[in-house]
Structure formats: structure tokens, C-alpha cells
Image 1: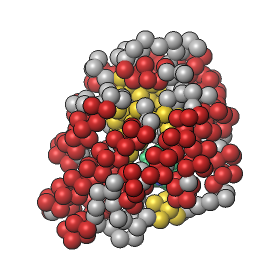
Image 2: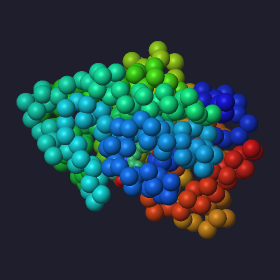
Image 3: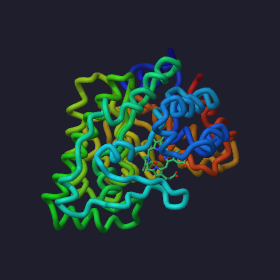
Image 4: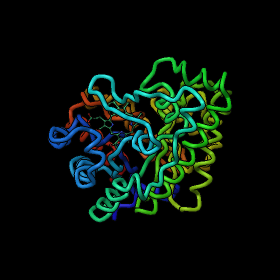
Length: 340
Ligand code: CP3
């Protein structure tokens, strides 16, 4: 069992810096496209044998130090009673967004063992075959709320902010239901075998610090507090974290995931010595000439040494356009340059 990833999460000594990549399973990989060619995306997420198969792929092909469950952050949202579609062009679409109290009150908190059992089944298949730790995940409450309120991706998050500012009670009620769902969902993932869990707050960076403290962070803290007793590392990733690090430091997470718009050395100074850090190469730096990319990797590794623990990752997910060979080169470079 390769446990460098878990050791780095806990801030223990490691022989080299572990690396995994957000969206390491996906369309940039021919082996993924082959499986995906036979089923639509939601069917892939809901068929444990296939979801496990594409989770294994990057571990075998890239040699990363952790696997991540193959699923999507919107899967539990469907479990809450919302319709979800994935369009090739527009990404996720929720045709009936939650914009008022009546729609909010209709939502339910799913029982993972019943409504989301396919995820737990996928985790069991993965644990039986993996020699690296398995990361489970969920969207963080604010990010899930944006999809539920906007009905999909958004540019200005006007509907979300309108509800935050004008309809405090409805927003709070929605966040409470999402939080209960996330806690139950992650607890079930851990009990099924996930050895760490990551909360993806992809859109929290659209909030200023005051709004982050008022409308996102309190529910993240609740999730983390509720899960602490389960005994696995919790990673909190905020895309666009630069202006929020001092608040993120108080989330209670043992590992903080950072995007590439902040210097990792500066992030480590702001986060302090009580947490490990995960990140943060620009996903597009995979298009640099090899030597230039390796210089970026070396810089991140050097600065990461100041943290309690460092897990190398991209600052966001692997993009579909990136050649697999470049991704392999990155994983090898992290291992080589950090002493494997
Ligand atoms: O990281 C992994 O390898 C595990 C799989 C994973 C997916 N989605 C698969 C996926 C994970 C961890 C996610 C999380 C997710 N989903 C997030 C948070 C992380 C992030 O990227 O910020 C978000 C915001 C979503 C919502 C989502 N799902 C969007 C916006 C899209 C469309 C964009 C795109 O890349 O197509 C998806 C679809 C999606 N999720 C795909 C995959 C592999 C592509 C679907 C396909 O195969 O057609």
C-alpha cells in the first residue's frame, strides 16, 4: 500500500511528494473516451463497474499516488429531487432551478444507502483493487447551491446573490438542506471505504471575503465538524482562494487545496503550520515546453516544503485538450524532482 498521500495529509514525513490530479479521469484520456463512447455521462456515474474502471485508469496509466472516486458533484443534487442533464455544449443543466421558498421546501435530504447506493458500490469495488488511497468527494454547500439556483454554470451568479441578499431565509434553508445532504453523503462514502474526502468549492471565489464568511464558510465548517469523528483527512479546495486564505484557514480542514492564481509560498505563509497544502500548477502549464514546465514544478515543490505537508496537484482540473503524454511527464517530474 502506497500511503504517501495520507501521510502528507497528516503532515508526517514522506520519502517524496505525492501527486494526484483533479479530474485525472476524463476526456483527455483515450481509455476514458472509449468507455464514455458506450454510455452517457450519468449512466457512467451510476454503473459501479464502469465508474470504477475509469477511476482505476489514471492510477495505472499515470502512476499517481491517490485515486479519486469517479462521479460528479451534482449526483447528490439529483438525490435531493432535482432534474439534471449533462449537455456536451453547456455542461450541467438543471431545468427547474430553485428560486423560491416552495421549490426549496420540496427538496429532500437523500439517504445515501438507498438513493445513492451506486456510489457506495463503486467505492467498494475500488478499495478491493487499489494499492493507493481512495479519495471520496462532494461539492461544498455554496458551490452546489449555485448550480441549484442558477440552473447550471454561470458568469455573474446574479440569481444566487439575489437570493443571498434579498431572501436570506430561503437561502439559509437551502444551505441547511444541502449541508445535511453533504454530511450524510460523505459519511456514507467514508464508511464504504473512502480514505480521505475532498470538498470542491469551485465557485466560492466569486464571493468577497465578507460574503464568503457570511454565505459559504459557516456551512463548510459544519460539514467538517460533523465528519471529524470519522477520522479521515478532509481536503477543502476553493478555486480563486487568494483573497480568502485567512478565512479558509479557519475551516477546520486538515488539507487546503489552492488554485494557481496564488503563489504557493505566500499561501503557505497565510495558512500557517497547522494544515497541509495541496496544489497548484496552472492546468495550462501542461502545454509548456518540458523544461519550462519542470521549472514550474520545481518551484512549487520548493515552496511546498515550507508547509506542514504538501500534496502536488493542479490548481484546477485536467482539461480535455491536454495530451496524455504531457500529464504523464508531469507526474514523473513531481516524483523525480521530489526524490522518488
Ligand atoms: O476528478 C476526477 O477524476 C473525478 C471525477 C469528477 C468529475 N466531476 C467528472 C466529470 C469530479 C471530481 C467532478 C467534480 C465536479 N463536477 C466539479 C468540481 C470540480 C471542478 O471541476 O471544479 C464541478 C464544478 C462539476 C460540474 C461539472 N461536471 C461540470 C461544470 C461539467 C462540464 C464541464 C466538462 O468538463 O465537461 C461536468 C461534467 C463532467 N464531470 C465530466 C467529467 C469527466 C465530463 C463529462 C463527459 O465525459 O462528457
